[in-house]
Length: 231
Image (cartoon, rainbow, N blue to C red; front, top):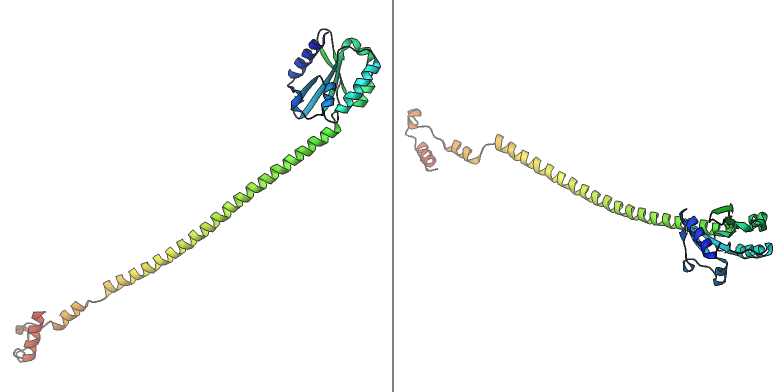
């Protein structure tokens, strides 16, 4: 099978499983290592690299490829070596397992078979965990800042409510004073006697006919009577 056909079969296999194809500029990797890579994918947080050997000549050739591919594990999460299924007899499975490199066999009809799964890079795993922890710390800090802002807003509103409560108490006291003053005035108005009434009572003189005969011609009574009429 030709190289291009093998590449297309591998692309179809991985993309059908949700992998995203990456290009050279999308990952940070020393330039010299790109010659060891024929395909790049992203699977969630993992970067997956595949080295394709279309024509395998010997076990030594395979060992050399595995040695170079193993270096990629310092930068790539998972690394595969893909070969044609017709070269299966040249494969040393223990060598793949010990190096952590995954093995893919591609049949003549294009069928893909993952014979040996790759082992995730320990360094990359630590980097991912570190990144996740850093991101979580940042998220927690952002949440703390948000809560602090909310607390400040609530504290300010509490102070505003205290001021309002103080004003309400002052108004309540003022209303009580005004109510008491109004009640006192009502009591005075209902129970007291006006000055005019007293004056009228003071100057009120009976009619002459109502007086005894010895008072009817009294000069002072006549004067008081005239003053009462004048008022």
